[in-house]
Length: 249
Length: 249
DNA sequence: ACAATTCCTGCAAAAAACCGCAAAAATCCG
DNA sequence: CGGATTTTTGCGGTTTTTTGCAGGAATTGT
Image 1: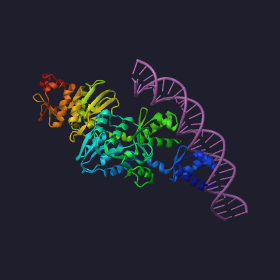
Image 2: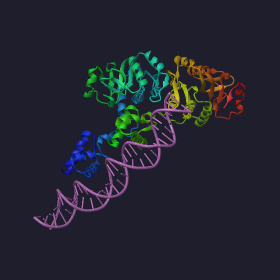
Image 3: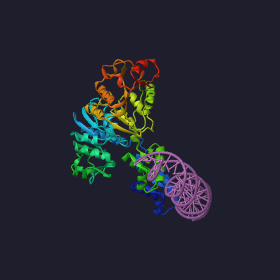
Image 4: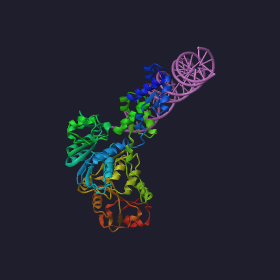
């Protein structure tokens, strides 16, 4: 097998699997590991692969790693925030959960928007209160260290007593079978009552969380009206969700 | 599984869940916990994650620290905060108002202190929640734009239902004739019920506010147990206050 | 205060990388 | 074609990296 042929094969495997190990390549192509190693070195020098201890990674793999953005997926979240804001009209009463996506939403609100925001997320409330035309209601209770939102019976009772126009949930997992799910019991309880206290429910998620699920169920798909990700709403991945009556944005 | 691949996976999980535990990762990836620990250590050293006992946290969650831009009279307020902290013992339940002096108090709390803090001040609650051993209760209601504290009937009712060990008030004006006074009606109402719901009341003020008064009265001198300023407690300015039974610190 | 986790340190085995060298293969050139 | 040169490849020995494990210290939760 020719050298260039071999390297082309390695690149091909990289594109398929996003990763290769030297030992596996050596076995498969039946050349010594030293040869593979030299190949990988060349591919790395010409910028066609990323060499790591034990093998190599595809270039697309490092895009996430080297993103100097301190907040993971910040651009994606800002895009999601902009889409979400298009749903908010003047004089609406809005209920929101916590999470970094919601914080991004809070920061991106136009200064002209006049609305009432209700939340138990301390950082979100702080952001909302920086907007001059927005009335902010904080939901009180014990503050969870992990999520910085208020959790407990008081918070749940308060949310139950509401019936707001629209509710934005930053979610951790959603799939067709289980609906929205989470891994924190307290947070899940809160989100559950939030969906019940809103006319419209909007789920915000970066695309990585689509088609994943977690142990604690929050609500089925049919409780959700809108799903917002950073992807194009026409993406075929969303077809099963659309069939369940969800509007993609 | 390659080492760098594994670390990328950890980061991925971290960015989805905002936190991961070493034991869970060890089970999921099927490597020893020591390996996970070393991975987390490397990720922490390169600033891609925050290592904590038992696992790691996403960077985005540490972004909630407020920029401590220049606060007027910061050194004085730090001194006041240190004096105030000497009054807090383990397992106490503490009620605090808002204001920059209280924020300074919140930042200066020792990490070993174990106590419950209750407040309607959003920035203060956020600071409290960064302390691992402190339980935080947020008081909910409408958030005042000026002071970033919750005001209204709900907040007042909630405070009235309490009887805490000690209450710290950041105050705007105090003199012998009028006691503590303020210029914001809502804030004054809150502080008034706070004094009534506490066994001990501590007033925090930089010395400029001593012997001044404002339109809305909060409580007379006799409702106050301690007065803390940046000055020496033996200062003769304080003699009239001491005569009213207040302990200077 | 006590039991259970988790962390750290040193160590040893396995895996991978590196280095130099030499044989084999390909290329070049008169 | 023949010989010199370059490239490629594999191999042995050494160094570095990675990983798991055992113990004792530190931390956490109850």
